Image (cartoon, rainbow, N blue to C red; front, side, top):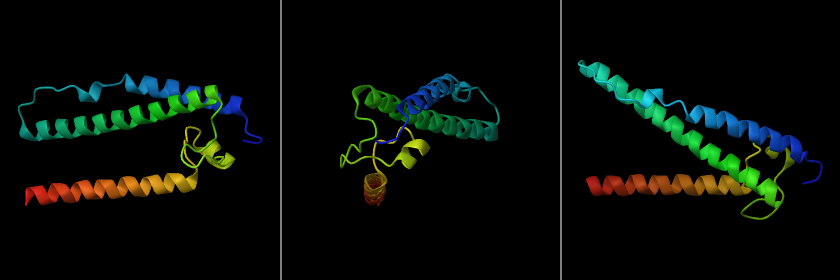
Length: 128
């Protein structure tokens, strides 16, 4: 954590938190409207699914940002939650809410992808 300007990163995280909060309030695309035309209903469902997906990603990011602010408060910011090594300053500047070093994040991403693939295969097996 040498040379990292925690105040600047905290300020950036707080700004991101406010931005995400304001985005989470916009739920206009989730509302269901009655449409007589089947094509309009399909388009509304697709628009709604995309909006829900964006809200879900925003909610997850907001959780990560708040967790990073908590790590600043408790003094553990900048330390990988997995290997407990310092997270590279360059990574923290690019992704201030990063909780893992690059190596551990890559490993976590591979595990998540493998688990998702396994769930897809299990669903295919059940459907057959």
